[in-house]
Image 1 (cartoon, rainbow, N blue to C red):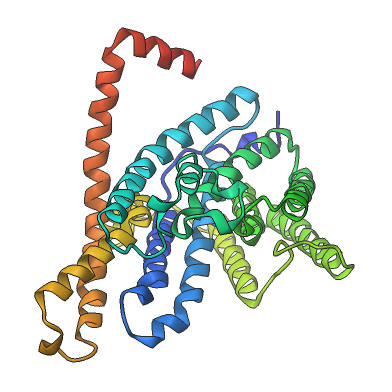
Image 2 (tube, rainbow, N blue to C red):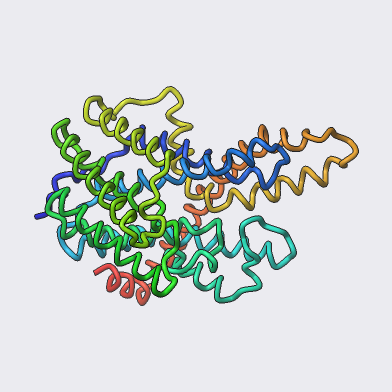
Length: 365
């Protein structure tokens, strides 16, 4: 029995949904500078990107630990199969759509012209972005590869972790294995290191059940980060694993406050606009995959409908901000709903086929 088995609690937390909703809005604003001429978004793009992605990685670690048991290898297999079933179908669909858009000549920002590089396309289809250098990645999709790598690595770490201390020791050792692959073979995406300790913070947050445990976790985690910094100062190349910035400190303080709130107050409350929060949270993955494409098509439509001479310099920018972004959120939700309906029908047809049903049963066994 591992230390983390007792933390199994499969419930929906409204605060997590709210964080996920905030994160996807931040991600959109991080990329909005590609569709507007407002210089303020150029300046704020990095901040939006960091906090949006940090929230996603934090809650992914939090939910991975709180909603799953990792006591046997079978638990790991079940968890990974579930993640693959949730991540890949819509992910494949987004690649097909963006590949087609590139083929017909549309300039999709961050797609790196995937139609011209078959190896690049294959690596991204397989979700291997986390294992390869960022020079060979579709920049908008690196998150998928990194989160899949985290799920794989930390499901193993959680299986063998008997305590918070052993979790941090195994995470520390795993980090240096990844650094070796990066430094010696130019493997592993740099963002695997950028968000590594934030994902760990999410796992630790889910295990904190009292102020006493929170103090203990905070102490061990601080030692973990301090050790990384000391090793970096000693001259060992830690890439970006030990690059702890002011943004990281602000986020970790926020994560501590979140955990403190989780311990001392109920997480069963409902927000005033809980329906919208739930919808946005449920659609966050779809919005992430398609927001670049939707905004590209929306901007193209605006440019076609309104002649350049007919409006002032910033009118299209305001249209994209106040109409385009809500349209993107709605469209992402619509895509998610329709795709889920299609996927359920397809799954039902597959399961109706005796040969395929036997194969699925063998796969799930």
